[in-house]
Length: 160
Picture 1 (tube, rainbow, N blue to C red):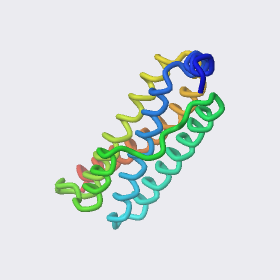
Picture 2: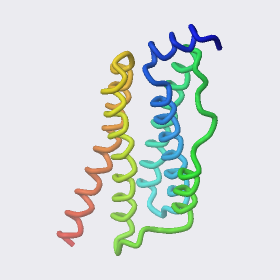
Picture 3: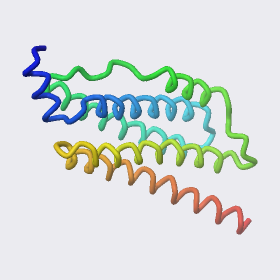
């Protein structure tokens, strides 16, 4: 890639490293959710994890396509930290006395981190702000579903 092409890519994408980081984060979190879903006895939580993972995959594919259109190579794999988080999720159930709440809190923490990173990226990449905000709405919906389930589980505990 020549210097003019690189400069044009940076001008249109902002910092391609930010998009790469978002893609890797989505892939890492999806891998963690997939690993967690394999251990879940509760079908609705498995569904929530799988649905959130599909949302992450669709967003990552859109961002990778955007990078390819601009001539920037998208990332190929997740990170070592992501693989470690997925391995941890496969082998350790939450230590919470209520397994359901333990998984939901973990989901909330993971998805909240992704949402925060998308908010920061939308602020830093004006050329992609509209696209990132559209994806952010999808991620926020996932997070709201998780938070709603946490509220329901906590109110069921208090009522029970």
